[in-house]
Image 1 (tube, one colour):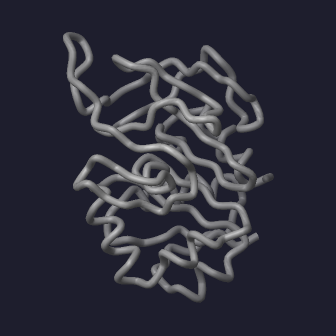
Image 2: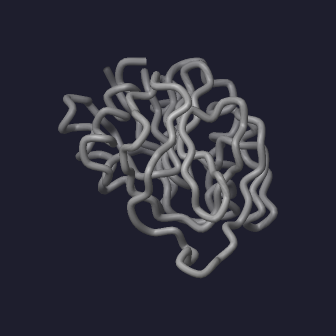
Image 3: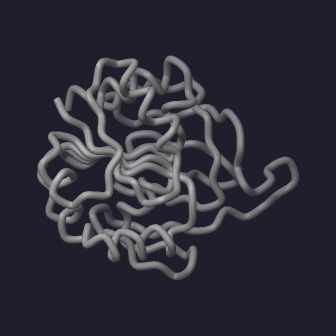
Length: 193
């Protein structure tokens, strides 16, 4: 199985790649359109800003390839946010693969922004290898509210989507590569979908 990890010149490729390799995956960090299109699975990693990430996707000619993809694809953190229709961050039109808009988190007492740390998951559908009550590691300032494709939620001042699944498309607002056994099972679910 070949997995293309999309290299947008930013993101958490340095931690996602070894996490997938530990699970036996053969990975390639690449920005090459042909390799991404041919890969059995694609990972759109996180970390960065929505506007810049979509500019890079367009500059590399990847928008159409990612939008028409019919094989498994995983978005992590910012990568998951890019799966939605829009982001308030830089007022960005995203890939539009999942309905919904990404909004900025509002800071509150005891809930600083960015949301960094471990939060308890409320799982709506265990198909993604997750269970309610488990903790996952988050690092983000923007998030999407609940959508029909939400399979896990977390409360951070408001209920936000922690994971989505739509067919062979999977997304995690949390960082599975940093989320211990919870994250490992989530990545295993991606590898087996």
